[in-house]
Length: 603
Image (cartoon, helix red, strand yellow):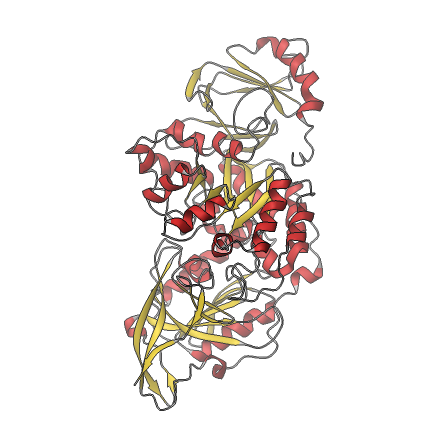
């Protein structure tokens, strides 16, 4: 069982919970006058009342008057629904550009009271030390933040170079930490399929500790390779994009995680397994995977996902199960959280409507943490060390020449492989484009939406730049965008139409220690500083969100019309999701898991 922070265990609390339920002692708090949503029986219980003691539910029933004493705090529900606090079954805090404390502060008003987080972003930059920092700050928070030990750094050995590598010994050590709930997503699915000893050792260390192995099967192939992957031990998967993916995972005994993040819209295409096929939803879970700060501040978190599932035709009570008890059960925590029932942590939301789901009052561990969007509690910070704030090492000042794509000798024109961005989805397309050559340099073709992409090594200061081409952003004019958020190796991704601006953008991030910047015609249009590991800011979410909105507006000013294009930008180096990606080692064909040539032909 993971550490409970300042909350006593059930064993320590049981005498008091029993005494309160029996009426021998007074509750700390009673919520009355509402309608309890029971996610175990999938029903709404009119007029039921809830008594809370020691941060846990003591009594849930038709009349809690026997639990009320002189000092009992009363919350009048006024006819509102009581629903369990929402759980995010799979997500990355770093994608919010925020530390765990600031992420918690951002999601508490939206009713998220439990998160299962995989900090593999910081693992690629700072290794096990970075994971421990995330874990330790998570345990300080007034809500439940469980940490999964990252499994794959690098995500695809031999195809990228990370700042640090995760080993089976690292995994075994992490399994002894109080807040570790399992192993993070096993992205190296080819390794599992082929019985890679390192991957299997990490899975074994997790299962030997009695904890959950996270999955990541980013392939449309549902044949023998898929079955081999499931046999390897991953217990869930969030990479499905179609109804058949959802069904295939559930049929194999996996938990199918349906995600709605800032840029991933995979709920609507998969939830039809419930709404049309009528399949049992108990092994289906809602999650976000990646949400940036702008989404959190302006649109919501798990409440947004539940609303979306309902809008897609899902019964509200089923959608709530998929964001509460299903998630808790998957991680072996059904007796600890995920429902309004005796003994569980007193995480509860008051809402006046089950479809639009306004989050009006949030209680976590028995304490009011938010009312009508206002956070009522402190979210403590770690003192992040200096070495976590100095992680961008370019090795030299970059110039426009570093971003030249040299043509094969004597070529006047080339057929180049091009990474094709797919709006609102993680996969890319492997495209080709016929490009002109001038003075031995291959030219981009912004008129036909082909611009340059570069991967700048930033962990060891080698000065290496890998160049290629990308399509789908719609950029025009002379511009560049650079980011030290570059899943999952987190080097620096630079995309642009101007080599001069690409150099300016890259050097700017080297100067400030990481972040995101957009340039046009030699001038900076927007900057989001991310000084912690080049991934996160410890500033408040609204401040970061405002800067992120400035980044979005700057991208739009440069011609980009994609929804949440920043997320697409940051995933261009994710060498475990098909079809074509870029790494510090070259262009990666993810359908074959091998480095491929930039050019198909030259004339």
